[in-house]
Amino acid sequence: MLKQFNRFLIAAILVSVALYITLTNSEQATIKLGPRISLTTYAGVIYIGVFALGCIAASIVALFVGFKGYLRERRLKSAERSRQHFFKQFEKARNLMASGDWAAARDLWEQVIHREPENVIARVELSRALEGLGDNVEALRVLDATRASSRASTEVLFRAAELNRKLGNNTAAADNLGLVITEAPAKKALELARDICGEMGKTSEALAFQDELDRIGYNSDENMEARRKLHFAHLVQDSHGEAALRDGLLAFIKRNPTFAPALEKLAAIEIGRGNVEESAELLMKAAKNSNGDLSKWRAVVDLWINSIQGDFTRRAHRAVAAARSATQGAAGRNRLDAELLVIETLLKANAFADVEKSLENFSTLAERETGGIPADIAQKLRIQRGHYLAQMGKAGETAELWQALAGQEPVGARRGQQALREKISEPSPLLSTP
Image (cartoon, rainbow, N blue to C red):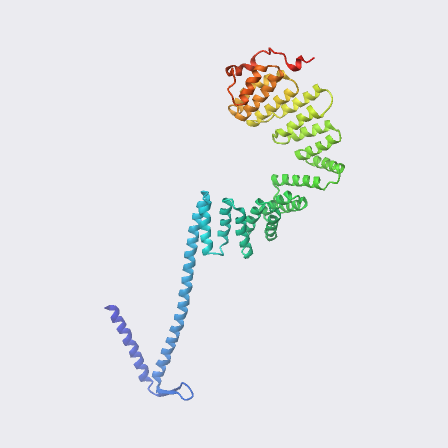
């Protein structure tokens, strides 16, 4: 009721104002609307009419602007709803990927891309889902489509480089990284480009990327090691002739005395030149700096036993010393493997008393290092024990070991643990040979 009264009051005021203006402007006025059209009436009426037309025009303009604002607001709200929907889909898809449900995640990302074809994030995540499904080719195709549409970002280029590298397309991977480095020489891009060029044998380019890493301040131990490897590869690649390579290696080792690959390479050259003693010393240095790699120590043992001429007793002593050096600093499983190498070397050196002692102590050593003898090491230990028993001429006990190696229950198994503690009662074939 109050609203109706207010409306009536406003209308009455407007009518009163209009009558007042009309009556106070009662003189005649003429408005020409065209060459032959004119309107003559009270001036007050004309004033009111002009005012009304202005209000109507202003209302039309305001309506037009308001309608445009309404449409813009509607579009913004629609875009906001779309973004919210995308974030919900994004979160759901990422949860699926974290759970390893790559197929469901792929379907969700495809739905997002169908609605928002320009969404680069969704395309990158779709490539990750496809990679999780093992379809690296299709994952790369998704990224290539993104690049072709000029929507490539740094993340897209990195992903493309990683996938190309997995597929063996190192040239394409390097091209992708080149685009990233041109835009901004970031640490990850430079390291990846360096590693790829190194794998391709382009050591000069790899060293250039390493130089750029040093220039921007990444002088870590890992990068220093990478530089040594690249310098070594470059030296081997570009040296013309064995003499030039040997001189280069000598200079390189002088600057990097603990770099095992260079020591091994120089040792191989020295063997070819007949300098076996020098080669053995180089291999010993390489083995000591190989972080417990037993293959290096095995190479030293093999060199002393098989490749060097001269007094066998001296060579055997050096071989055993090298094998025992492999046990220094070793722990856990590596310690057991090193002890097996010692036993193997003692057998080659015919040091049977030491072999028996090492075999007897192996169980105690294994209990201390690993809490017991692992199955594969136990198998190797049986082989060494069988070799020892055969050398000592204990045919019966050797047969039981062969049965154990074949997976059979050996006859007299209860006596097996006491085999090495018995007195040698049968003559060794080696010792009985005249």
